[in-house]
Length: 504
Image (tube, rainbow, N blue to C red; front, side, top):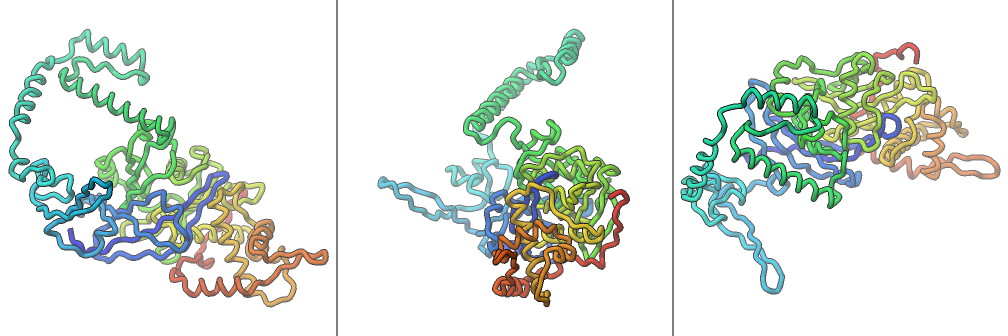
């Protein structure tokens, strides 16, 4: 594999929210682009990126996911670390072997090992020390030829498997059917006479070992009943580490990896099923009406009542990355605004926010999420800004649904701070009114006051509340705006083609 291939850089951030409480948004971040001639890559994003500071930029490991198009070649999955991004000679390989001295200190020695041969004997080369024949004190030829012990074991297994019964009798079939009707899925089906005794014993041993390992993890507190068993999802060209449990059906929830169509959000059990689905899936964008488009960024309005299955799948997907989200299936009272990024293959999901069709408290957001692979690139603020743009068109003052999560409060306060500093920078009068700010920005007066207090710009003096125009904060904000390179990550109100739904 070419060592000079450019690597896609991703920087993860957090995104938390609930349909009725939590919110998430990302901070601005520039992402290195891919060259046109490179194959599509899969980025692995981990939960640990939540704790990175706003200014930090770490490169995520990249995995190559096989393409599902019939005319594209499939590439082998390979994990690339940061140290492998530099140009290094392919051979000879040096493996660090750690040797412990009597004093307890450790030293590393680089030993020349050839990359020829493989421990299994099935491949001509190896790429890790675990597959190196020399490391296991063997030669490449010895690995290809089975040992005498292996031949004897193979003959023994072949002989044991010959003892398998020819088939089930009529009485045995009736017994199995009766057992299935009585116990259903609460009991394991009867396995006797289905295969050889040797294979059945191997299966029982594997069951016992898996159960023992699971009990050890539970005793260590690493997993609990009902905890997340889906560790990764394959979503388009990305492979994403999940952060929280999501209530998928039991037959899917117990899988270690889930495969999803990035357009219709259908979830599947295997890569083969996904490949077949992608060959016949006609979806290239979310259902509903496209109400905004600027460049390759679009926003679709999806009615939870008209597209119930899609919205339910969207909520289940969002729960994998949100902690306290509670709404999964009752999606009919909500409208979903899905942001996508388009290319020649379709409109890829960037993030979304939902809002109630009829909110008595004028909440303009119920849940907001930016997909992990698009975090720290300015899309979170675009989603928040778009929610307030809809409130302006409705001639309402909006606010996110309470209570806010810690990360949601940080994201929204960052947006409110930017809105207030921009307003104060352009304000030329001597007296300022909180009500006027609210009417012009569509931000709730309570949110404006709380943000001014957090910025220490609101003082009480001689029986009056005064708003202090802190020029140092304004200058700091202007300096950041000048350095910001993702200027296209803004919402243009002229690109919105939308009228408020009736009854809202």
